[in-house]
Amino acid sequence: MLEQIAQPLVYAEALLAQFTRLSRLANADGLPSSLVQAAAQLSACALSQLYLLDSTHTCLTLAAEWLDGQAQPQHTASLPSDYNGEQLLQYCLCQNRHLNLANLDHNLHETSFLPASETPWRSLLCLPLQDDQGTVGGLLLIASHNARELEGFAGSLASLGTFALTQHQLLQRLRAPQTSAPSPSPASMPSSGYGLIGNSPSMRALYQLLGKVLHNPVSVLLTGETGTGKELVARAIHDCGFRRSQAFIVQNCASLPENLLESELFGYRKGAFTGAERDRKGLFDAADGGTLFLDEIGDMPLSLQAKLLRVLQEGEVRPLGSTATHKVDVRIIAATHRDLRSLVEQGRFREDLFYRLSHFPIELPPLRARDEDILQLARHFAAKASAFLQRDPCRWADATLTHLASYAFPGNVRELKGLVERAVLLCEGGELLPEHFNLRQADCQTDDGCMNLRERLERVERNLLLDCLRKNRGNQSQAARELGLPRRTLLYRMDRLNISPADV
Ligand SMILES: Nc1ncnc2c1ncn2[C@@H]1O[C@H](COP(=O)(O)OP(=O)(O)OP(=O)(O)O)[C@@H](O)[C@H]1O
Image (cartoon, rainbow, N blue to C red):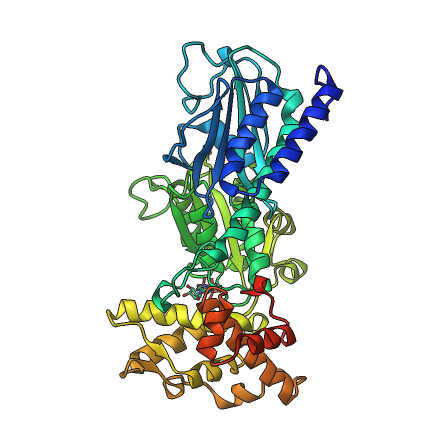
């Protein structure tokens, strides 16, 4: 790591001292400025900057700057991560690769993010930093007025920066419970990740995967039963990624006959077929720079699959009736509820396209695999439905929550949404009661045949406790009060039901 450094031992000692200094900081606010100071001193560069990506991964903020031996006053301005001007920062962020420019005099990159200076900036090194989830959480940058080779600092400063970023997040998390946040009303219940609702282990695993693809241009294949949120996830990838200012276009591949689907997707030239009276651009052109969501990809006809493969491989589109191709830059997110592998075996889906699409597969869990999310989803849908109907948010009767928590939903979030919306419509006194929900009794009881009564009751109790804890943002005293339990009893039950603060 240090082979390109002039005096590696001296440097290693200084680096160790900086790791030690950063590890001793007990205040999250001090970490960014200590990191930029350390980076500038270790590299002997006049400038060091730390940019942090916000939790939605859409804004970059200059969190700290060290210039000519001094910490600079904190900037409040933030830059959207999809801004076009700062290609250099954007490149490191999206590609998750460091960039070393040893001579900025011959550089075409825009560097207006560097502070104005009488002596020009002549070299820089920009390093992506990963957060504790393993996704890019920020950038550390050093720059010098001399045309210097800074590559040798890349490995060690990236490690130092990643360490500081993780410490920063840990300290922020430690501090969070001490600020007494007001209990959220159902209408303001926060969403859990990328605008999706759910905090179950399977949803948290999903958020981790999403974090990996947001700033990475790979095609994504979303699989999962119908109504599990595939389109919602596709939108989240688009809205939280760097293409968010561009178009998000949806096309259902099962909804159109082959010819129409082809002309919709690829466009056509005047005279390509009877009725083609003028040139028309296709959806790939409309989504240029943005995202095209191809729903029900398993139903795409084989001939179109070949054309889609060409777009994925070459980034080229050929409209119907044209001999020429043109380039497009479109991120493809495909979705299907079918088993594509078995369609490949049956010869109904191209194997090469299957492998091309499944570079990054994401499977959405059915609702039955995340029943602890049911009440959170139900509250969310009820709050949205009330807002839509311009009504005050509904209250939830305890019996209703128990009723819902014990219902064995199959796979479909859409079904739960429909049930809740109907209940909100039926509810007149402002309180949602069990009779407002049209739940099939059989499903309330049958559930998983392997579960005995005690296990079923424990599942219901676990879901209710989790719901109450979430509603109170993890505040156990408040949750215990609301449940009418001594706090110690709540803690005992949480322990027995295997509920940890992380589940909340
Ligand atoms: N995690 C979630 N948080 C909030 N709403 C959700 C979630 N998952 C699904 N929904 C809602 O459920 C409904 C169905 O979701 P969506 O249309 O994305 O499913 P799908 O898997 O694409 O369905 P299909 O296979 O039928 O096309 C939508 O109204 C969506 O907003």
